[in-house]
Amino acid sequence: MTLGLDAASALLLLPAASALLLLVLPAPRLGAWLNAASAALSFVAAASLLLVQPPEGEFLRVDDLNIVFLVLNSFVGATTSLYSAGYIAHELETGRLSPAQMRVYHAMYQVLLFAMNLALLASNLGVMWVAIELATLTTVLMVGLYRTPAAIEAAWKYFILGSVGIALALFGTILVYMAARPVVGEGHDGMLWTVLMSHAAAFDPALLNLAFVFLLLGYGTKVGLVPLHSWLPDAHAEGPTPISAVLSGLLLNVALYAVLRFKLLLAAAPGALAPGPLLMGLGLLSLLFAGLMLYRRRDIKRLFAFSSIEHMGLIAFAFGIGGPVANFAGLLHMVMHSLTKSAIFFGVGHAVQVKGTQALSEIRGLTASHPLLGWGLVAGVAAIVGLPPAGVFMSEFLILTSTVARAPVLAGLLALGLVIAFAALMLRLHALAFGAPRGPSAPVKGTQVPMLVHLALVWCAGVWLPGPLVSWFQHIAHLLG
Image (tube, rainbow, N blue to C red; front, side, top):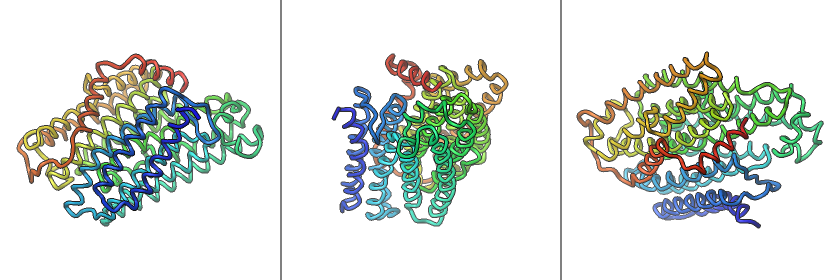
């Protein structure tokens, strides 16, 4: 067994074993550090896949596309688990969580990492569907962890809308299998990505077209695309803040990965519809709607939840345009958004704990009361709105120039959406970070290192990207068509 296959297996075995151990471990603080150690080992396993790519097995598949998602997911999963150790310890001290709830939280965190890794590694599209459903159910439990009426309502809404989305995705998956069956026969082969891709040209295009509509609506619910987004702000607002970082930085990307896989399948079928316009339409709608909704937020976590909807719309729009530059920009923006938004939620979590509230009106003057935290949030918001030289600026510039070249009619709407979101977030940032502090000013508990590491990566990426990384993304952009 090669190193690569061992590493791919480790990405499933490590979180699965850790989840079982964490569920019964009596010491909650020890569980927090075991959770962080397991997530760090998963990142090492994912990074090792950059050195050796194993051949596709019966159940696991490692290729250039999913390695991007695996490395990004495991890195953000590791840094979030480190941040989570201090955050959850504070919740235990204040009585918001009990030791039993902490055990459930840490176990479910590893189950979530397992489910996301399985979705990315699965060579069978049915297994991928099951893994994304498992990730959904796990996140439902974590969103409702505080057991307040609002948290239970948010978890229930997520469960209902997520179930509708996953049911639509299941129907689309069945339609893909029905399109493949007359060509490849019944059984396991009709669900394997390599078999489907090699025979896609012979599939019934009408079935593939119908399947993609259901798949886009189903997995688009998980991506948070408008009008399928309404679960996302509630889930962010009522769940633990580390889960907000995982939702925005990881889980939305996993659902996007599923959409991209099926987009590639349609591209390999000459008679099928072009999926690009559908992605562009939903993406642009999400960008404009979320940008406008940013002005009406009174809760800091809901504010950045709508920012996530905006950026996932922009990423979907980029992949909808297609072509080497837009696909490269979409990949880059996905990475930059994951790093930046998770860093912002790290800062938001600290801010909520030191101020004792999520109300934007009560969180003021952080640069004066908590300078490192306040300026970290300034750097994060400045990056996410696309100020140069942050990496987000580079990806947004490439997406906008690609739109001007390939769909100039839409370039004005795209620019308008970006300007609306920019103005809304900068308006909120001014009061949040500057001026006279308001309310309590408890010291920050836990480490701020994950936030600073993410921000350093994002701002450095706008100035310099390693040559091998650029070549790798260019190669994947070419594969995406």
